[in-house]
Length: 432
Ligand SMILES: Cc1ncc(COP(=O)(O)O)c(C=O)c1O
Image (tube, rainbow, N blue to C red; front, side, top):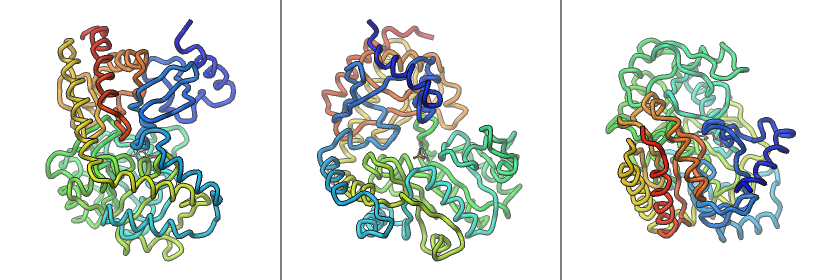
């Protein structure tokens, strides 16, 4: 009997009702050789349990939000309390003020904030505000960074840094593509080239300050500061998409860790403590362009709902405790470095991209500094590693462009169990 029998049956039924059997393409196993994804039905601490009763140590972390692990008792208590008082009022609430204030303390660049329900909404709205503030249409983004699924974010690179983009999804129009330029991350020359060609039309540069979407790639020393200077020299705004990094790499996000403040910031994932919450914000003079104060319209029925906001407050309480990020850093270093050593001992050629508690193992012989490098890493090796771990009760994201993410509920025993399984996984994998 297959270890995944009930998951396979769920997938079969799901295909008949839900497009592709999944509610987000990242959940399918298409990038790792196909087949039924595992259907989970319980999460507890550092573990998830599938419908067949198999236990997994969870390094997927729901693609980022799961920094507190599953069913953290304080989060559960908050959700129950919030639900007992009603989950949605359609009015302002006092908790929103407290959360906005706490975000401003954590990320001082967030002088004014607006809550939304997802990272996609946060980015879409921040870009609109940048266009409204500057009166310019074009956006520069970095190749391989993901900013959600709004139209502008699904534009692929043109043939060079100064060339306009192409739709990367059916249903996105050429006219949207005309307003998007894509340049290489960690490449200041490419950014200069884009500004030289289109400077007066560029509203903003948006980037993940530390990349989480072609694995984990850190900015070269001085890169982000230089990006900010070039952007400002041309009268454009800098947006940091910290949907993955805020409250993950440091309490105050990448901007605090690296000491570079953007004009606007987008947040999501970890701020919600596992419930739907996003936010965007920045300097007051820019955010004042948002309705009802200003001309840039943005709204949301579920935005800043009491359940999400109170859960976020508890999440920040937990993450703000002394030692949280030191421990996450130590655990990230311990697990990733030992995994690399085991892989290499078994003859595999690997590179590590890491920041704190998130990391990626690339099957390539060159350090990865941009999307092309990540894309050049071996797909089949990744798929074999993914399968090897899954079959041994270790859950990773089913894509070589994602990261391992550790939660505060992972213990050293969990990490050591993972390393024991890694010996088997890397030994069984064919070398290339
Ligand atoms: C950096 C970044 N921005 C935005 C998004 C979109 O967030 P959401 O999936 O909540 O819409 C993601 C999602 O993976 C992301 O990684």
